[in-house]
Image 1 (cartoon, one colour):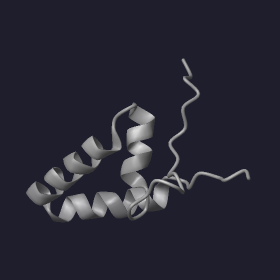
Image 2 (tube, helix red, strand yellow; image 1 turned 180 degrees about the vertical axis):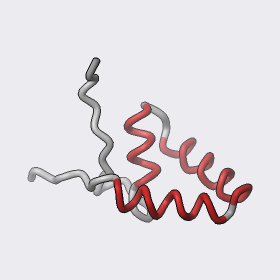
Image 3 (cartoon, rainbow, N blue to C red; image 1 turned 60 degrees about the vertical axis):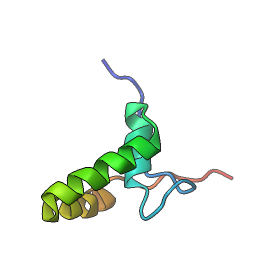
Length: 67
């Protein structure tokens, strides 16, 4: 059962690396909600939240622009 969705970091809606925007697009959520949830989780866990973001930045490919 393949849905055709791809996890990609958008080039136009990023604040730092586009990880939260990519997750919001993939799961069909508002990017603000995902960013607020990430900040809340990071404040609680501190180091693991930062490590997750760096790993996600390296693993999730950047969206290709076809202009």
